[in-house]
Image (cartoon, rainbow over all chains, first blue to last red; front, top):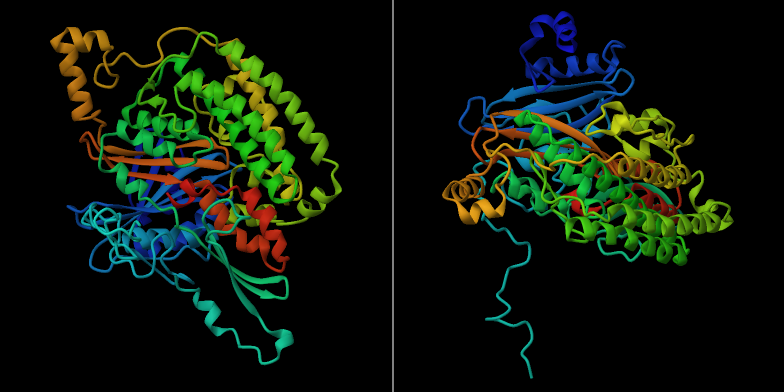
Length: 166
Length: 404
């Protein structure tokens, strides 16, 4: 039902619509996304005032490689939906939603930190969970899980004790 | 870590009287339970700007989940919000069950509700006890920790562990509820009632406590929604949003409970909402125990549930079934699902993506206290430095969940 309403309202702007497991998903173009998100927030028929989550999925074998995923909830109408933007390498980027929701600020910082997706126009796009000198984006599928990047050089305390025992 | 760009533009004061002091509070500060750093800009004791650094407890939860089978994610979820691990277990299990299109047996659903609510009480006790402790009411901490022990004793009897329970499985539970659960809960709630009324009398009309809590850390409803706040933080502003009511999962729609709300959205409201919620959770547990149905606690589908040990040891089919499930994992059909549960701190959502193999392609947690920490600088602006402590306490950041 929500999907019908979305189709009626946004028509050709929706590149793809998916309905599975009782969840409605729309895929939109990067350049139209912010306008659609703003209308979803402000239109009283949707009233998606709560931006639950901004994250990404790395489909390393596909082109475009990344999906940026927004989860929205309307408290007053009891609706829930997912919006996706597909972005390709190199330099995957989308426009920021931080001007629409305050929660987008940190969620987008985390998405940038973990996936290296740039949020164009974000007021303060820094790493958030990792440290500044960290190289790469750990949740990308090509980031090796065993790679270590210690801030302080690692030593083996057995072979090289910090203090010699007396 | 670098500081926000907006800080670079602030002029440097030439006069000592209007000097802006930059101070770093944390990451290991005795008054903030949790490893977190506040980069503060202070005018005297007034906070001009507050930049919060999180991530000190980042262990790569989402990356770790991609390495094992679906079932192997459960121990990781325990370590998100370690004050209420079974709520995390339940959230993850429900998200995967949504992808599998299965529903756990009724007894399992009741069991999940009971443990979730017991853990909600434990989580609130931890939060409120620590908040009292930080404001000088050390006895509250001891009282509430004692009450939490009674809850933990039940948790131990049910799951075999006190903290990292790993109790849920996809499609059900790892073991049945103990036969004497009713008596245990009754005894624990008897103690809990006494302790809660003691704490209520000690705090609710306590001048020092109220002065430190009331009208501090105010965030109005529209701003709270914009910051993505949920749970007690949002309900304190007067919006009765609770996932258990808004989109009922498990068997929550069968129980009669209220959603306590506040009015102003200050720390005192947050305290009261949590306090009231403990009574509501108690009611749910009692009602669930009264109406607890019998039957199995896990689905019978051999592609999902492990066979009983007798079959594993005594038949080749059982052994193969066990081997396939352990080594290859449950084959979750390709797709994606999001399932939210009402965590102790707000909407705890699990977004799971499967590519059809036995391993998760992506597991994403929507951490409620991460967004709470994003909002704290708005709550603290132009307040005193001492207000950080009660506000931080009421956000109840759990490092394991915030930093993952």
